[in-house]
Length: 166
Image 1 (cartoon, rainbow, N blue to C red):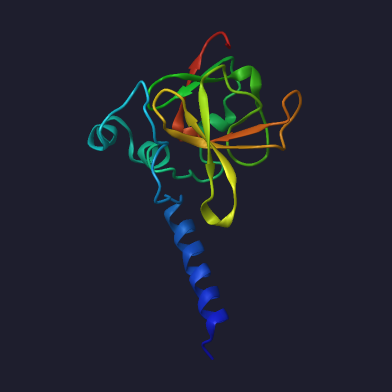
Image 2 (cartoon, rainbow, N blue to C red; image 1 turned 180 degrees about the vertical axis):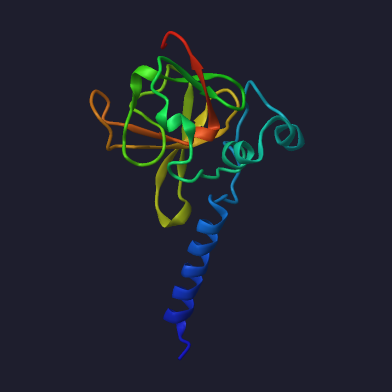
């Protein structure tokens, strides 16, 4: 018998299956709004970035957990924005969170901004690049000392620059 509960359950199952099949979810929202030092038209961003980078940085998508090579990056260096090359995180603040995404307990000074993300019926704190507004991930209050924060970042939104850690 088809009732409201059945239809809602079937819809949720179909959405979940679609998300798994695609490998990532692309939200209908776009990168942080405002005035940023680095700004391109949508067409220019599409030329500059790979498809996955565009999906995450400009459309607030999420990469598949465990898919980023940066998850296993343990050398000294800096993690920078893939959109504008702004240094974001020092390797000194990277830690293994077990979430499947590169995680840090603190960004570099003035590197990121935050906005409220109320998608999916929950409230989270979205993290974006302070120079280009590109979506990086989210920050949570369950990280290690000294900050107690976990900056859970999409690896595809960043590039790693080996060398002395900032």
